[in-house]
Amino acid sequence: MAGGNAVALDDPVGASLRGHHAHLARGRGGAVSYLPGVATFSAVPVEAGSAEWADLARLLGPGGFADMFDCPSIPPSHWEPVFVLGGRQMVWAGAGSRVPSQAEARTGVVELSPGDVPEMLDLAGRTEPGPFWARTLELGTYLGIRDNGTLVAMAGERLRPPGWTEISAVCTAPEARGRGYAARLVSALAARIVSRDERPFLHVADTNTAAIALYERLGFETRKPVTFRGFRTPVSS
Ligand SMILES: CC(C)(COP(=O)(O)OP(=O)(O)OC[C@H]1O[C@@H](n2cnc3c(N)ncnc32)[C@H](O)[C@@H]1OP(=O)(O)O)[C@@H](O)C(=O)NCCC(=O)NCCS
Image (cartoon, rainbow, N blue to C red; front, side, top):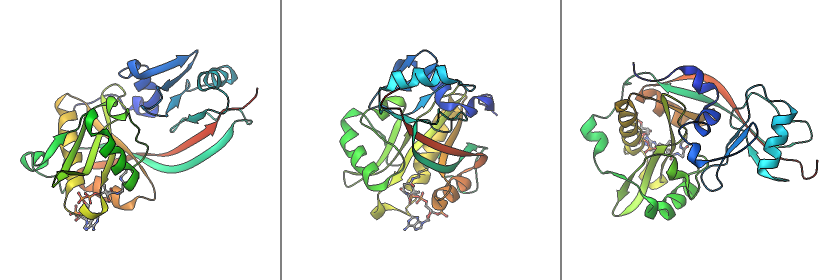
């Protein structure tokens, strides 16, 4: 099957920031972070020590939000924990049991552009699929479905470690759920990703059983559990 080495999936933020998304990155020493407005994720080397955490503190500034994704290293104890969230990383393992046909996956699906961002922010705010910001669509292709002109569903490409593309921001307005829109959008994105010889993957919170069931029906399987963590950098050193 097409796609990259699964090791890249153990540090998808760092691998994206140092590679495909380098133009959307800022760095200091061993620390890297997405530009403000694109994403909040930061990364340090896998074996980070106090020097690399100090680099990140300088990069983000005093009291800055260090959204560490599933980073295995833990910052020094005087960094304030902000959140911990359990989830899973899923990888596309080939077409699942309920995959829309290619023709169906494309039906009514439009590519979203910067002019759509206000509506995308509104939809993400109403459905909470995960973090979505004013410049997030610069990370990749975002697709949507409109109902009488109103954006009611979207999904897009986020992290890009070598050989892989993450599908993210999957959401459908409450009044448009159960019509297969999310299945259509995820399938359309997966087809695009596979067509350029990459493999789709994604992350989902453990509590989101509806989304997990949908992804499994579409052909994703769990690769590993993940723990998302966020911290605040020290206000003074
Ligand atoms: C998860 C979510 C994207 C699913 O969107 P959707 O467009 O309703 O998904 P689909 O219609 O493609 O599939 C939903 C499944 O639930 C079933 N379903 C039936 N009625 C439903 C309803 N009222 N609401 C939701 N799902 C319903 C569908 O039939 C389908 O099952 P099937 O594949 O066996 O037919 C949507 O619930 C959502 O936006 N949730 C909040 C944001 C979120 O958690 N996103 C995922 C982040 S990882």
